[in-house]
Image 1: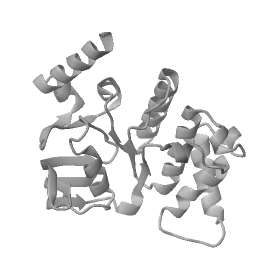
Image 2 (image 1 turned 45 degrees about the vertical axis):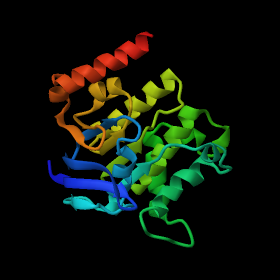
Image 3 (image 1 turned 120 degrees about the vertical axis):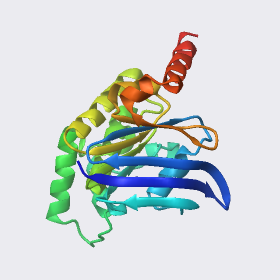
Length: 239
């Protein structure tokens, strides 16, 4: 299992203002890393830094066996995106263009890649449907298939189940887990501690201004921080 990404003592922020410091973690091929933390803790800033959209203020992010162009990215959906007037097939195949190769026409290999991604996500029968007419869960599958087309090795998912009903959430989590088992590295930002405990192999927990934990899921569950976070989530759920 080769090392794909190594973040070394990073300070992350924007416009010269640090948001979080002391970020250290490693992602190996086939890992499922769940990034936890409250709003404003720096999760979004970390995502932008991993995507190369925001420079690291201090420290280094080393791309070992992976490259920026090998990350498929599934951002949080906006209302505008949900109403996008294109077919499922058009949206999925556009992910091939995100790999940095522009062509005035669609290549055969791109069509094959899109077809395979739709098959993996179970949406082949929806390929001619209009995206905005789909359910929220179906839309997320389409966007995940698009990210799969753009990815060679890694999928970066930002709160992928936000706004979905419980069944659609579970279906999407299971689909992501299936992709991980097939060899795809997953990095997922989430507020869902239960999903992290169920599916992730590793956990990165960012607190106010600093990293609180990085390690295996098992070590996180057995830590005071993990126990505290799990119990607080269960208490909120019971209310």
